[in-house]
Image (cartoon, chains in turn blue, cyan):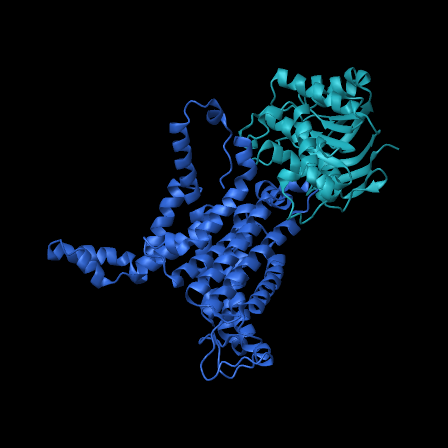
Length: 384
Length: 251
């Protein structure tokens, strides 16, 4: 029975994932996250982290510059909207391709080094991209203001097919379905499912095994007749394309691209998502992305007023002390909360949230299946 | 001329002459041992075979192909596998994955984006890897994480990883260092079996028991030069060899 379960475990995982994404609005309703704008963010950053995990979790390279590809994806999509059509499909194809090209170039150079030097190189490239987008490349990126749509955009394909948006600023639509609200979420959700499936295939493929080899022991790889550079570069480009898709989707749901999307904080965020959820696990990064975006949403919404009422049971002096202390961790300062959360996870659950989940599952197994000798001596499985 | 031929190889590190005018000829299908006191240049010489070090002058050829100036993975792809002094394995992967990686490298070459197949469906490669683990007596531990193995088991695993590629030449750097006697004898038996399959071997070893039970020919290296090369029986009583091992130690 265990064998059959093992055989179909990936299919089960996939089905559960599809169900969870499609039922997302219902499942997340009780925690107050069941509204489309936030759900879209979960899906988009889930894609970003999934791709990043192929590089960090599978191949072991820590990039601090993936926000550059996110930004490239956004700019490309807005340009495709302006020049071609408001349909997201061609825009996203171009986003993925452009991000792929950028990551090929940056990866080709950065992968000459490993470890911290690789991280620094990617960081330098991303900051370069950010500064270029912010200043020098203003004709392409519209600098500080950010790239926006305008009524006078040519939109060649839309014009050719006789689509006229009239006097209003157009918004993206997939053959008539507007990419906002729930349709927007389901569009992102379906892409997340496809991306998850591709990641699953990579994890289970000989190629994925080679990437794990690169992470585990490059020296052995070389003496085993394997050229590690192209493997690492392939992983880098794949993760760059995922980032490009995520960036494109950000612009699909909200047609605006600004340089700040490329800043190092955005690169750092995806690192946090992946590690928080569990680098090297399949589901971890998606969960990490969800947790961080959810925490951002909750904690940044608090203001002094809500805090004052929350501590209203205290005497006035204590209330003010409590408010000024907790005030540091919410609103603008929610990153502080994120930092604390991250430290707690890294110290107590180095394998991320997925390690916590697995520990709970193991505890449960031990307490219920105590009689089975098979489960006691079963080799520890790598986390899913 | 043998399958592996080293001619007049020199290598210096700064002012230190690590190898000077080294010649070596390894016949196909034989076990050739390189022995010598610490610092004689044994590991330096081995590193010149696998692309890790580039000799200052001289030539190293394998089956009439020069091994100089090509990268370690290319050298492996032409049929040379190497076992390290401290086992180089994929410590956080399972044993079966450890052996499947070299098996894929043998089948698919140095780089292939094999993304749509599933490892679980690669029955041929898996079977080969499993058979190899059985040969070295590790098949029962196939699903364990390699990092948890004992040192002796790690060595056996590394050997399996090399052998699954069916190399033409196997380089072994002190394959029994730090092993208990029983483990050492197991390893000797295993290596004898491998040798019977016709795989040429070059062994660097300190343990004379291992050397004399395995080697067909022995080169004695001292201070960067080959002082004697002969069959084991003649090495034993050679005064030059005894001097090299005791030399400098004025008793």
